[in-house]
Length: 143
Image (cartoon, rainbow, N blue to C red; front, side, top):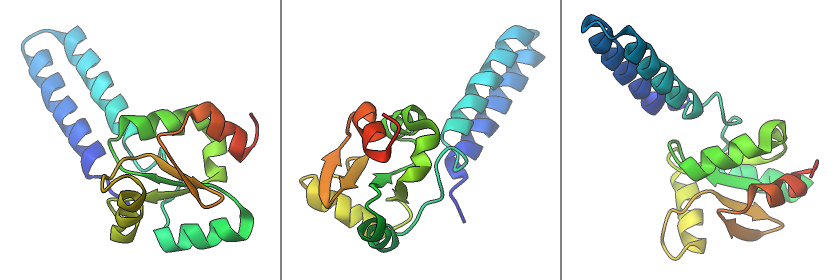
């Protein structure tokens, strides 16, 4: 089951704020707030990121086919930026949510001085913390 808590919270808060604004007679502000919070819910939803694997499964698959492994977490603006910049190419990497897999969080901490800094991307066994999206686009193909 993917994590829908954060995106659901954005949608509920946005709906509440929008309803309050509309009830006070400010329909334009209400609709704007609703749109902003729906957007925040969308970019933080599991729909934006490819299906998460466990760290062990992603690393096993990466060894077999050479695809990068991207460690991420919901709500991370750098992860969202990376995912959006990769576009459809994001499916050419294996994505691991560190909040769903304690082993994944441990892997990230082991290469980031004990910090859970994401995105952390493994390419050919080497860790790259918060890499340039353009570089990763080249790695996954399609420059």
